[in-house]
Image 1: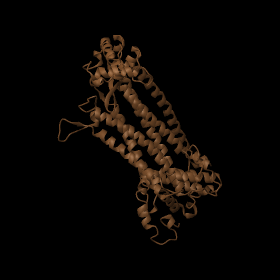
Image 2: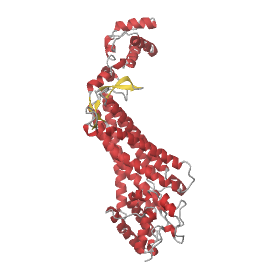
Image 3: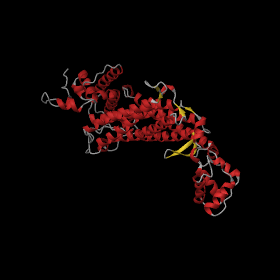
Image 4: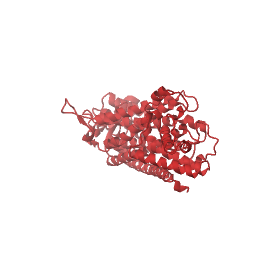
Length: 499
């Protein structure tokens, strides 16, 4: 049985042809491609079944090739299928193995009608869609965890912030549901990415199709895709671009995680004391025995920053490339793999951190009263109940604070004080009764009365929790449906499905 030269494209060339190219250009690709072995075999098997259905290859050849591909899958699961660097990538390694087993007369038809180009596009999309669904499940776990915590704290008053200065009061439950909605957006983004990615590129060959009567729809169905990519050149140009789109959405997800970690780190300091991080996620100071350091949160924050860099790197690689296949796009693979790995490892840790925080309700409530934080509510109440414009009411409230008619908080406010200040500022008397004043004189009263949709009142917070719960449930059903469709399709990649 004659073996082909290595690499496959070295047939008939000089001994050192491509030596430097393989050493340098292949880089770490051969290591990264280990992830693709199972996908590669499935892609080749699906293609062989299609060739058989289209009467392009005989059953005798397809059976033999199919059997060797099953052997590779088994060896890979046992960590025994070794990718050789001189063969550059998983595609040539698998093809050479089949040729070595069956001879070039039969094994040489493994890639009849397809190329390494459309194979790597297909392998990558299969990898990406699986990881998207996995990350989707992790996000669902996070959102449900945040929702459960929010239920416990719909009445836990805390300060809201503008410019990192204490502003209108909210509740801890309101803050948590805000985070849930951000991560819900991330989940929707990933499902949208899945829809774009789950189209089969196989059969575009190098970048312009084949003269063979290939049925790309059959192959797509075998591999669990929702359909085929509609234009061969568009498909070739999409490599790196679909990775960039996914990395963009992972960057936004990383942003949401990173910003949350910033807040938790800040709010768990002695100066704030709102939150206490569980000991699972802290370390001690080697020189300061009094410290518990938020090391895990800081590493989460740093790892999230890496994803931004990988996204930008991918974008810069892609932005000057001409149409068709370019080897530059190979370098988008490390960026994709690393970013997905970071998210996959980070989300369970982040979920654990967020669902194990201890809340100091007293400190939160006290901070919510800092610097007359409910001044906007008081101004609105004076305008509404006193019969003046908001801007007039604003002047009254500003004078109350600036000229120290009140020493510490609006709980000192009375109808007489409002009348006195309004006459001074507006040259007319504005009257409110004490009951109306009391509705905005404290942070908790303000929160309870802010019943506008989406606001922090306990009732609104409960509505948001229920809304999030319903939306997550529907999105989870979509994810499970997609997973089941893929699993069902891949199970049919057997010769028994045809013979």
